Image (tube, rainbow, N blue to C red; front, side, top):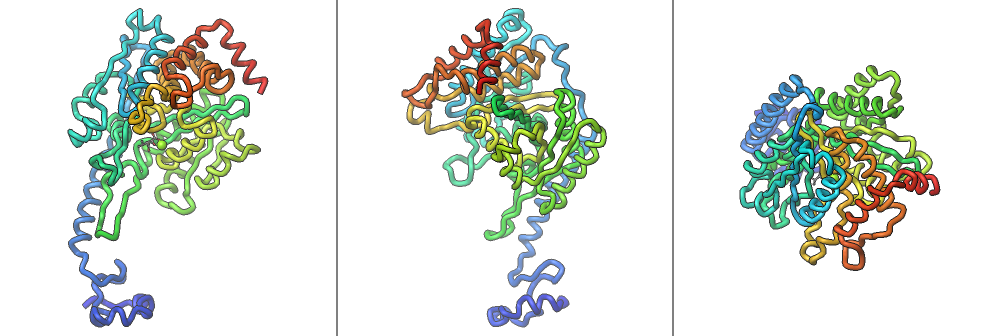
Length: 439
Ligand code: IPM
Ligand code: MG
């Protein structure tokens, strides 16, 4: 018989009658150390322990790989640079095709000279993923790995009960498979002095083993949150070095370390350590709840510059930030690793628009902006800067061609033509300055 600790007697005092049917109190199965319960969960606990052990083994191997590190790709030495274009699902193929047109136009010299090559990648559709029961079918992953960088349209992420097999998100799988650890999401509203760059950690946190949680019983579900020292260090370093390189003066670290003490505590500890190597950059720590409030505080929000945060907080905060910029359809997202990089829209695949025959009216801005980040990443920042200015003029200020998502507005193709016209206008810079300063 197991010892019967006093606290358990106290805790169950009011339930005494209910427990009588299970026999005397001290016959409750389980120990005080483990908690008090009446049924026999030995098999459930053992199964959960085994699953946890498998997660630990996998993550320990991953930490070892992270500790070895990898040299970043030097694009100036690569020719041709292969840019894979992944249409994805829903409105993805329509908006990605427009983004490719704009990119080919802006980089026409490099394309003509054979320095850059675009390569279509088929098969990252929900139908194909569901058929193969793989978040990224093997042959598609192989094609992706043959490219140096990819531009990706949205891909449907199944959830329990939506009719598709509940496979892992293609985005999450790609970030992990290619170790794309930095999710960089800029949000700018020049007229309001807002210039934020989010460095969202992209491979850890609740996402790392988000599809490997345990249903211990039909009533108890447990997920695992993974934060590692090298994983935190590389994203925090990326944020600080970006701040230094781009003349920013402040980095904001966002956690909930007061409550989520072990994992967020580690992230914050690593931030303290990294910050010491950048004495010229000021840094502060904020909790995610108050951070979401401060992003809509018009008196404070333009003080934030570079923000670095674990995966899920970054997922949420960047949607809020994009909405402030004009909607999630206006933001782009870079998923950067040492070797590979993938650039994508941050919104979903809008299957309803396709069902209603409106795909051609979808806004391509988010994936075009992602294309701008791709150009910056592979060494064409001037071309990217022109593209960003055109996106600001066409989407925020001049708005001569307006998308409404339906036939009351322009098509994505007409909007892309408008973007290309704006990019090539000789007075692009003056026009942009005028709009930004007049507001
Ligand atoms: C994003 C998206 C993805 C994420 C989804 C589609 C899995 O919301 O890129 O922000 O949660 O990371
Ligand atoms: Mg998101």
